[in-house]
Length: 568
Image 1 (cartoon, one colour):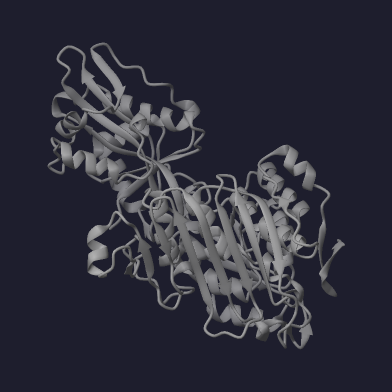
Image 2 (cartoon, one colour):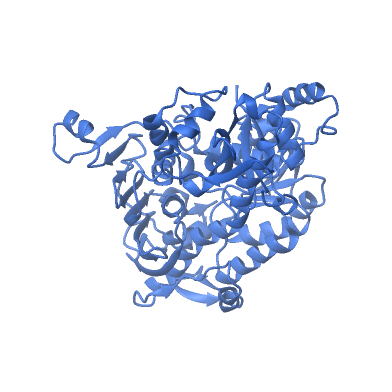
């Protein structure tokens, strides 16, 4: 059973912390380990901490910052009374700010210190520009829940596939009206989902429909046989042949799984119709479409997510976890390959279509996405090259594309997309070189990673080598073995993260800005590859000036000759 969770999304309603008379509020500093242990060990959070264990605990916390650990002391006796931490939690598909380890000694009960310390943590995140904070709690922690509710936290109904409505109703019954009626964050109920593009769309929509947070009610596709197949999977859903009919319905959200060149336009149309969006990769096909997509999200204030599922298989989750917790250090260099012979998919009903001419390097998010998420940087400069059309069955398109990316943090990334290749099985591989350790994901069919960390002496001794790797099978860090489900478990996770984030009113796991950072390098690397491998700056669509430079850039590959650009 998952813990109860709450979220706060309105820091403006919470003022800065002001310690009452007789209380000293300050942040953690060297020498406070025993004071922190003295508080926590007296509560149900206790773990028999001593100075050594406290140091080990904080050393293992993601992005630990002593300025985010708050302690309240008795001003007269200097006795430690209460504590709380501004920490981080990987939840619902992304790192999220977390109020954690709120604890108070029994003699401090009723002094309002829980409220004070939560205010301090919220203020910490607010000053750093964060838009939401989550926390975990338990059904029996009624006094703490009262504090959270009074500060403006709201209960989340859906957590890790569980519906917590009944548990929260029981909590509010015990509160006896102290904090008003139960009001969940977000919608407070399941999301009604429509699906555009019922080939890939139906495959991933199954996971949204299986969640208590969502229900698939409508599908849309121009092909009658595909619509028929959809109704066999979703017996209670209706189908339409026109997208306009889907948008005119009362659905809450659209899964955009249409043809890749149409993703941006279809997503924009959905948001303008008042629908939230989950878009298949890639997010857009031209820089101008990228600007239009970003501005549609901002103007309509609808939730948008790009469904970059590869970040959520066990191997890629291990990469992002080790980077997030500081094990790997700062990224120096990374490589990512996506090798998939798709020549059998390059014709539809015997005719060329978008897969026949789309440059392989456009489709770069499966390799680039996990690396960018791990390093926390954005791409700033790209150089691209292609291999031409050498393999029989390529239908006149490019066999493969590669690019080098200079990142904002100074690191370098090399990416390969190879779609016409003499190789089986497919390969999705990443190697991430950090300043502290290196992680290689090996091949997706092995489902193992290799960690090279010179600090891990005992692991190297087990491997009988001085500086060799530790190989192991990652678990996804969530207690679930999903390796046999849709793309190594990534389909189920990406849909759970999206539908629960949407239902709970959370920031999207892969928002439109991160989607732009993952999509633009492929577009520009293709242009570099057909113009003599010229370096091209990657615009940041968060910035108005960069948007203006892209607003009229509608150039795209010529479907008749993908080795040249046309202005669409």
